[in-house]
Structure formats: structure tokens, C-alpha cells
Amino acid sequence: MNNQDNNHNYSLNEITVPLENFLHCFANINERICFRVFSDKPNSAFAGQKLECVLDGISDIEDELKRHNSDKRGVYFVVNQGGHEDSEITRVTAQFVEMDDTPLEEQLHREDSLGGGKS
Image (cartoon, rainbow, N blue to C red):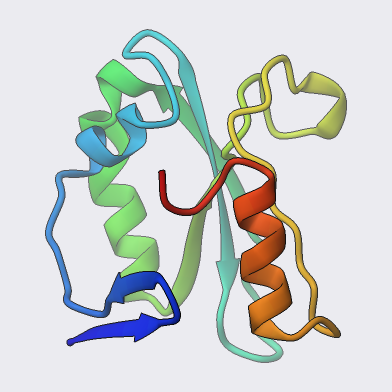
């Protein structure tokens, strides 16, 4: 399904991209990727887990990540490079901004003014 919001196009179609290819957008092949796993179930006994590997070795932990996901746990990766903790970050790969109180049109305008959006 394709949608249009003013001049912004987006698609809700599912795409399949190998995990290593997706993560390569954020890290070089020899860089460390950090993952965080959280339970999606309320009152879960699972306290969470931090995992990591070099991108070139993602296949070593991919099955474990899939198992966590199958167990209804959220699997997330740290977008910025360096480690799990803020103090360990050495390179900002992406920055996120949440504007719940700002209308969508204004958010899109601000994104475009920062160099995001369409080119």
C-alpha cells in the first residue's frame, strides 16, 4: 500500500532485507553492533539482555536474536557506534526527535529544513 502525505511518499509494503545488509547501513563490516533484548510481556521474569558482535560475525548470534523475538521479546540495536552506554558512543549515526505535541505537517516541514526528507 502506498500513501501520500502532501509531497511525502511512503509505503507500508513489507520488504525482506538480510540482517547484515540492513545493519551495514549503520556500521562498517568490522565494527561492533550492540543489541538490547527486552520482554514484550508485562511482569515478565526476563530481566533483559545486552548482546554484541562485529557486523561481519552477525551470523554467530542471528539465531539467538530470532529466538528472543519468537519468545515475544523485543530485539533492538544501538544505532550509534561505540557501545551500549551513552558514555561509550564514539560516532552518531542517527539522531531521533519525538514531537508528540507538534502537528504532522509542522514535523515534516522541520525535517525538510534540516536536510531530511526528499532531495
